[in-house]
Length: 551
Image (cartoon, rainbow, N blue to C red; front, side):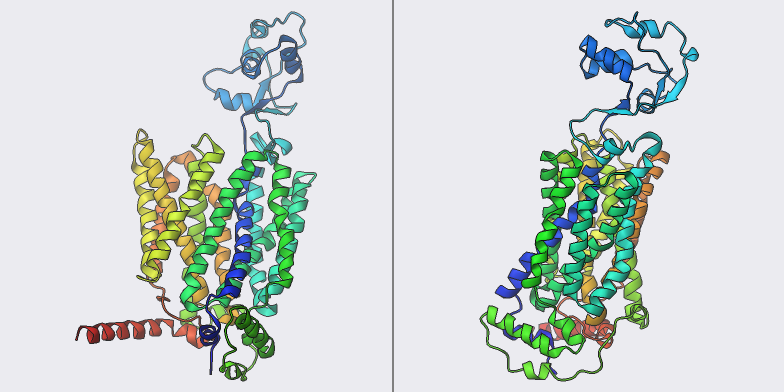
């Protein structure tokens, strides 16, 4: 019986057809980045303080600039209270309409009374933000006692990722990669626009949740579609460059956000390209691997002929054997992810590694971003660090394999986080350097798990397996803000200690996965169960060939 990989060797493993398809899918990967980390710019928190209309009017009459207005109208408490926090969230109930107030030193008249005689109130008149743009924070006043709502905004999109991973993967395996891709892209575009026009905070998080529910599905469906069209020799490069496209999206997001400082226009700018992807209906075919797994062999043969024609290859003679009946139609089931021992082990290990990647990746961005001064430059530099990780994978993955570079990346991340936490405050340059190393290590792990996850499951549950395992990534994204900000209140570097433990454990678990270097994508449960046995056979054959070569 001829497999689809055998056919690809004859019609081209990565010919013009696959290159064009891959180029189109990379755009989907790039536009997913604003949904994943767009909160950095959509939820930007500028300097702010309590608003007082009467004090503002006095400032206008006196011609004060912003700094003078702060010095002349903000009454600070005694030393027992943080003055910055007090000026941001509290104010004294004072009468700024007194006619005796001067422009020279108005606080002298107001503070002639003891502070104890003035009532402390919350910011009843709202806030003044020191920014020329706008964000969801400035528009919906997500500060002080409502600051948790910003965390909820990000948690909702991650919760959407999580729920979407549970059912979109099933839809893709049950009804096809192409319908799932197009429907998820359409819903992502619609609700992305609705986010930009959300009138209130409840509507904002509702639309963002629904966008998260389907957007990750479109990103992963695009990757699965590409991985199933290319041959074994090019699969790893496609997987890595697909991740690099996401990094390019990060760089583009920093540039777009720099020039568009209004969050609604920024949301529209990063959402509208999704409507263009609906044209993929006419230029992106269904996966022949999926069609064959569903016994739709006539449709698969037609697509194979299109690939051969585009790649200027003859139609293979083995096509007839590919169309023979291979059994009953296979229906994906969640039970298939845990029913057999090897696939069950792979599922649980991959779920934890996805979880750890999200916690450390997002956590490092939050931890470094909290100490930066230029949000656009810091974001851009942190994204640039991801390119060396992709280069390392390309250089090592076919020479050494998947498993050992992956494990080293996890161990390096854990060690770098641990050392960073123990470095004294005076060596900030060393902290930043080690932070970049840990970011590079976890990025390597992130890109590697996307590559290997698809190689460990048979075709008919491949999308389901990736979606379910990667759903742990979304749970990690939900709890990461609490790990970073709550533990930092105990000790600023405590989150790094947690990241070190999580990353090191991931490196250990990676060693329990089979090496997939040089192996074809499994088509059945039996093939997926025998991956470890194939690895041992390939290793013995390699040693035997080396002995023969020496003789």
